[in-house]
Image (cartoon, rainbow, N blue to C red; front, side, top):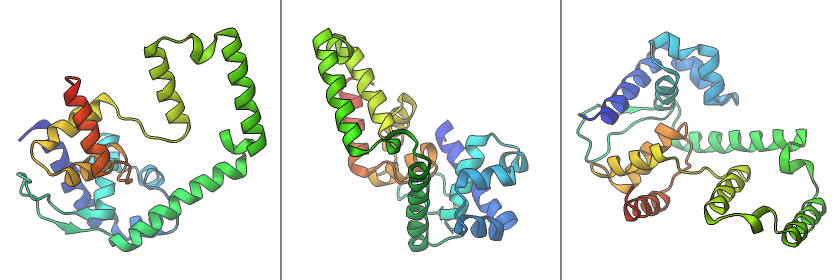
Length: 213
């Protein structure tokens, strides 16, 4: 069993243990609008199970969502249902995302602090000035433009691929279907949020293999 497989097995096992120890409490807190990070912090789950924060946080996701072994899984771990069923979980996850967005809007954080006209005006002025002075993107090398694009994507809320996630995707693809790889990446790197889709995983792996990752 690979290091990655052992880590997933441990998280699955602890997730089931959490259901027995904190099941009702976790479900009530999640339904009340608390995020996984907030629940994790209030219950101090990493200390309770003697593991690092990453493992405990992902185990919490398994406790909430349950575990269903992928078709080609070699770990032979038994499946178990989550504390919250998939239909309700989808509704609650969307509600959590909307609440987070509304909070940023209320506080006028980042882009939410400007009107549409102000955003457009700022973009035009900045672009003209940079072009005239050969500054900003007009003075950047190809690599610098790539880095700037990544930074811009992050500010817009897009979740970029890290080298670690790419390597995990390639390794997991040796045993699992694309859909299963996407689910595992979401559990391992994105707190069980549906960040990676099958299409995104397929493209990322293709690009990584093509450039010799």
